Length: 154
Image (tube, rainbow, N blue to C red; front, side, top):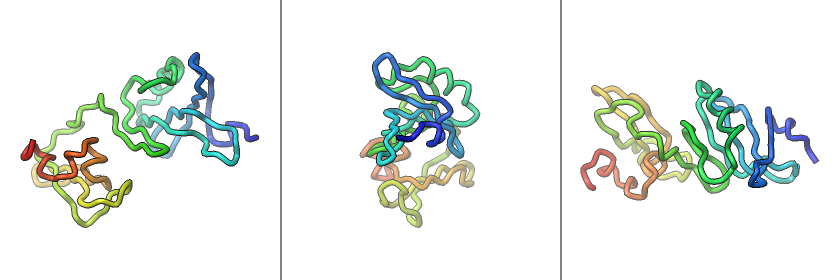
């Protein structure tokens, strides 16, 4: 059996619902991990909710108060893990003002290898070039069609 700090957790606890959760710093985020495991033959967690490093205080507060059921509160940006890669549905898609979302047929989605990936454009300049297809950026099957990204094909 491994001690949980060997996986990089800075804290773990069992919620009132009996779910083992842990707080783990990542390279660019701080994560609340769900179903943490001490089994060295298993993954260290089932899935995680990633908060931006700048929101570490919020992540700690949510971690301390969350029951481990459903979606946690706050501005987590992604849920990642076993068969899940989802953006926070409570965050507005307009995290920044864009003129359009453009298809990039040169890159494949890092999750499912689909093309095109999504590029956010403002004033003719690339604001953000995701290595994700429309499905994994916008969270709906409709977004597999790039015409849907800008409301052309509702």
